[in-house]
Image (cartoon, rainbow, N blue to C red; front, side, top):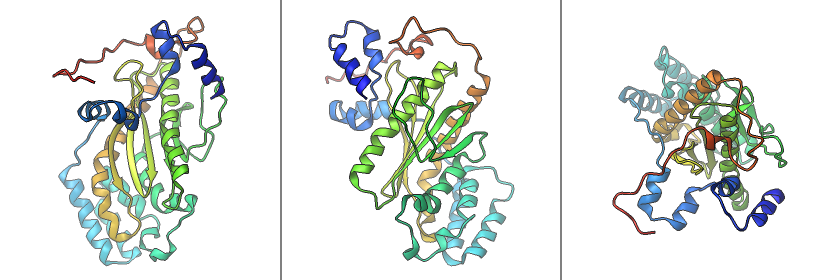
Length: 309
């Protein structure tokens, strides 16, 4: 941060596009809402959406109804039987949640500790959405950062391939204080930007970084790409509540679309990582310009009708 502050002070008189690009601002939804009309913000933050198939929603409903009326062992058997041979996000989520008895326990045993909360309520989401992808998964490990970046970062979870992260997750338990939650809200977009820069520098074609922010028992699914050149704008794929007992399993229904979209984006980036060229151009002569600036230019489309800001 000291290096960034010094850079901003020295470039208080910006004279070129490269000077602006060097600052690498992240335009979060909260920031955009403070300065732009709601309809403009809605367009800028709208992310990739997927409509779950009717069979997938029917599968979730039938398993939810059975689980609400039966014990863990019977529910586990029923879910395994109903999901047998099915390859969909619903089946993966149900299998992940029924792999432990956490949702069938007495509510008084629910954890407030962050690590235990992740095991009980969050891990199944990550396993269900990304478990089938050929990533290396890390829990509370140091996040890969570009050379020269000094601040150590430790997300609750990230997935990478060839040391190129493309899924990042930050979690705070319902008992966490507001200050800690606010810090995670700022840190997650930063890590997504760092991951995106590394993917671009490695020659990955049209990469997308997926981020999940879990706070107050709610999961917000987002993505980050460069739809508009030089603008880091996290896009919202959707939000949903996390179930904490067997009666709340239907809360997964609004999460099927966002999680399916996140899985598709992560899988697409994984394929791009594997296909990337192994040699890159030398950018040492352009230290203050992002490598992505040279990939291809993208013009920001004009708003129609014109909106006065």
